[in-house]
Amino acid sequence: MTLLDKDGVRLAVDGAVATVTLSNPAKRNAQSPALWRALTDAGRTLPGDVRVVVLRAEGKSFSAGLDKQAFTPEGIDGELSFLDLAAAAEDKIDETIATFQEAFTWWRRPDLISVAAVQGHAIGAGFQLALAADVRVCADDVQFAMKETSLGLVPDLTGTHPLVALLGYSRALEICVTGRFVHAPEAERIGLANLVVPAAELDGAVADLSAALLGGPRDAVVETKALLQGAGRRTYEEQCAAERAAQTRRLRDLAGLGE
Image (cartoon, rainbow, N blue to C red):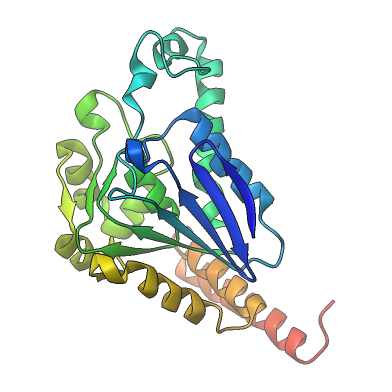
């Protein structure tokens, strides 16, 4: 069932699995504020019984990054040129970028597991969108690159936090500052890709993983995701306490003693 189809984004739901598709292959799924608004709307539209969200893209590229027309004086039709945005007050710039970031944050909601199916180029904003997902399954032709710094900018679409968490500070710094491409073998070796498969097998691999992710009871999966998400900001002792509290909730629920 298709629930949304606009501005290069399509949302379809089949039971507990939702699929968000970047649907503008003619432009290599270049991103724009309209696409980000549509992604935000997709997150808000998800039915409550969805447990897994697959992020995929049509065509040879996952996403070639930001539509460069945003940096021209005329900008993208119907949108504020980024050159005009630069002249706005600092609080206006901050507010606008925060709105853009909403398209990249909901994928890590504790009640969902998100899986990005990534093929071809995932550059800049495309790389950051792939990083927004919990898990990345990649085709063997994938090419990641963070080009923002090379263009005099910074990655500002929430990609820096997961990149450092996945790769560590030094490697994340090197990838961002050089803007070089990370190809499939390296992506799998350094943990950027959870799995690399031939391009023809990408959809099947994602379907298999989605089915496996649905295998556990939802409440246990939600608690486990929350524990793992918070581990990096807790001390060892705090994490032990969080595990005890989560397990207490699970035991009581299983015994029929939950609130």
